[in-house]
Length: 427
Image 1: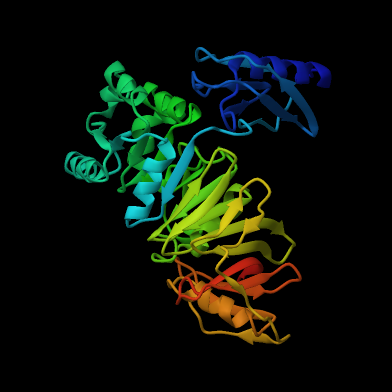
Image 2 (image 1 turned 90 degrees about the horizontal axis):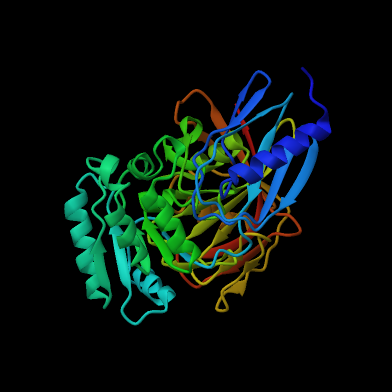
């Protein structure tokens, strides 16, 4: 039976409001004539603006309803594309996302962001293969910074129980900040988001963030900040799965150990495969500190690479790349970059095209390529794929919007670069 488009819009609007669409992209299962909203929805979400796309029809629904419980709603309709929910305009909390190799400045930023003289910081070692030992070590380290380090003993072995227990919910409620350790990010999502459904502990973590608390993580603890999340793999074999999504839920993918482990093409493939436009690669020794208005600042001693997927022109995948170094900041909503005050613009010259034998998977590779762009309009490189079945042909190009700055340091943080165009094809 065919249902009138107006009825479809009404049904979806009612479904969204009654099911209270999750903070991000609603999980929908498409069957013949029936669409069922099946994702368990967080209890803490205040529905602000719901954006539904049915075929090419868009409907906006505004509500201030607070979701109290999970609802499963079924709407019988003809077709539906997706239902997307825009996140709150300004989540009040702070994220400190470390790309690997923890460092003092990042932990001190966590403590400062709480606004407390002696904050309570929970350590979540779920990702670790030795969670008890790792958790205790980090809790002691945090105490050394003058804070109270609290171990949250949720592990892969016990989380089927502990992630639902009220004592851990209350423990999270008592905290000013949490820190997710490194390890395997899939252990975190398996424990806190089993089957795509948030556990009570995850809901408590979201409450912590939405009341102004600090969520931080290193390595695997950085990966879970986005949803979708990179769960493993390299290049075209990248594995993309669900993450916790604290950073711009559904609108960004985060990768870590970015240059040290040669993950430039992995993130590019993740963006191409998912259609997500914004990717952030954080290198070891760097951290991205993101405030409630999605303004993020780079700290540490290593770069953060921001990749924006511009689409496919029939022959090439096109990206805009900004290579940020400590002291730079970016507004993730407008993508406007503010350059650190100590950096000096580079005099750009040359209109030549250069082919370079440079591996973008090495830690200094991108920085060296940016240096070549100061005297060449285009620089092309070839990179063998992880499967060895094809070669990536990548052209780095200056445009009228490209700006390059010198930092006064050595590679890989010698340059900050804004809006370098990338043209990528496979041969």
